[in-house]
Image (tube, rainbow, N blue to C red; front, side, top):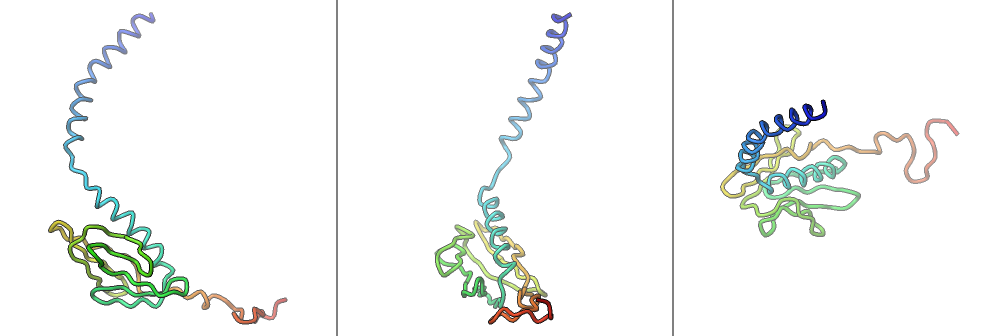
Length: 147
C-alpha cells in the first residue's frame, strides 16, 4: 500500500515539473523596477510626516512646512528630492520635480528616464492639536472646572 502511495506521489510531482519550469521562466522575464518600489516606500514615510505637519506653503519648486516647531523644505537638489534642514533623501535619480496643489491635496510630479510620475503626498489642511485642548498651554491649569 505504501509503495502505491509513493508511486502516485512521484507521478504527480513528475507531471507538475513542466508546469513549474514554465512558471519560473515566465516570471523571470517580468521587468522589475526597484526605483518605483523604493519611491512608494519613501513617499509613504513622507506622508506620515506631512500628516502632522502644518502651515504648508506650496510653490512650484518647493514645499515648505512646519514640523515639530521647525521649518522644513522639500525640494530638488542634485537630482534628489531632499527634506532640509539636514539631508533626508526621498526620491533619487530624478530629472524634474515640481509640486501642485489641487483642492486640498498636494501632489508631487516627477520625471525619471522620460517617464512621468504623479503621487499625492498630503493634504493642505493642517491639524492643530491646540484646537483639541481645553487647557491653557502656559500654566497647565484646567479650564473645564474639573480638578
